Length: 497
Image (tube, rainbow, N blue to C red):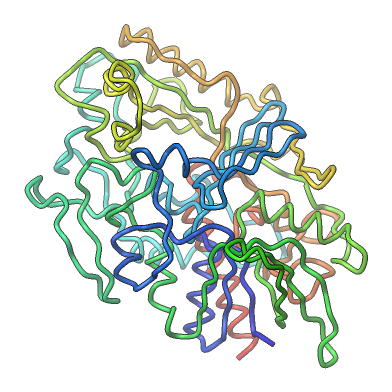
């Protein structure tokens, strides 16, 4: 029997696997997505790899599947994204070893609220979790976003200093988990990490939401999993978990995990003393709902599905006039902007590097080359709920209950009027920062996990991803999730030592 099974390999799963393996435990990571074909992954000796959806591969590998209302579409087990459409909300999740870290914009920000972890459980010491922030930023190579970076396209390109403008570069810019060249001549040059893993400096022609082929963007697969593959951690990709069952083992509770090897199509099961769920918010919730409703399954979780949120994510495009820059020659994020008089949401911009490789008509590419991706985000209330019907997740999310969306739409309108160039927002929220539904709380009626990340009523079952977040981060949640996973895994390793 294994010490620990970890389901999922994003920031939550990979960090947990890293910490437990370094503590001497035998850890099995089950990931339903494939290893992606990047320079770092090839240098790690991984033989079975699936392509990122660049070029013609976008036709076959962009989508893994989609849930449209009550209908489920399965397209390609090696596809990159899973799309969900619910009344009031669209959700995008990533499928790969490394999870969402393979497709994120590389932004590294701690929670906006400095008291984020306070007041959720009387035995939780927020300073213990917060102490992990500097380590995570160092692990991921956080680079401050400043005007003197050698970038072909940045927030300062689009907001030159003009007194009186309401839309300006934000005074405080995020960090980027990006290996940036000191000069443009260094773009694409290879380097080797201390762990012996090869990466390449950003060449401003990819490293985007379609994935980082050269490894310029730090992702959990090679930052956290790579160094422990020969030190106690085993990763099985293309293994989709369907059910988690409690079992009695030597007077205590362990777990049996049922999964399908998608490469062979064979059902399998493994047993462990502990299970760490880190399959991403949507899939973690699905497994908890399914497990609690099956005969002999998980103990009831009264708060499951409560306090779900979308981080007030709203996306759009700023349709600029032709200029000397191209949206294709860019980092995925180009910085944050501020709108005077609208202080609460965070606003940012990005390019579309890599989209020029897709099989699109020339006139579409010419138009996309002058579009800037824009977004607003902030702390939503957690009034939304998740449920489970006919083996599928349901989400009830109402934009009208979240005043911040009005502020974000107003800000987009100000950007349009001030620039004289169209800004188009999506008609309803589209989130890649879904959170909660199995959150931290002081008791089983107000939370699914306790101060250790252990699921109430289910000893030995832990949650280490965004599903456990107690409230919205208000910024990209990667650092918060990684810190929570560090905290949960280190405490688990200490208790098991």
